[in-house]
Image (cartoon, rainbow, N blue to C red; front, top):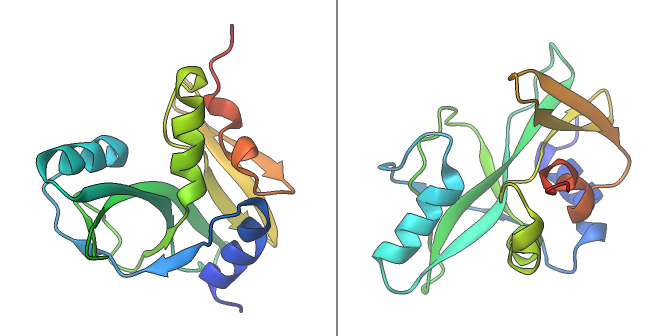
Length: 160
C-alpha cells in the first residue's frame, strides 16, 4: 500500500497553492486534549516569535477497515523553524503534515465560520469521506471527490 501521507498529499495538493509538507513536531504537552486551535493560540500568545501552524494528523493505515484517518490539527512553529505541539496526542504513531491553506482560509473567512477546525477526513476503500459531528454527537460521513479547502469547511459555515 502507498504511504498514507503520499496518498493524502497527492489528493489535497492540487487544491492549494501552499506546499503540503510532512513535519517533525516535538510533542511537549501541557495543553488541553481536543482543543488544538486554542492550545496553539495560547502558546503563540505566551512566547514571542511563535506562530500557529495548521495542518493534519495522519493516522496509520488500518488493514481491518482498509482505511486511515486524517484529522485537522494546529500546533506551533518557532522563528528558527522548529515545531512543537502542546495538545496531548494519544496515538504516538500519527504523523504531521502542514497545510497553510487552512490558516489562510480561517483568516479570510473568520466571521462566517462556526469553528476554526475543518472537517476530519476518512480514507476508506479508496474513497475520501468528510467526517463531522452532529449536535447529538453522532458522526456524519459525506463522500467527497475533491479535497478543497471550501469543502473541508463546508459544515463550519454559519447559516442564517
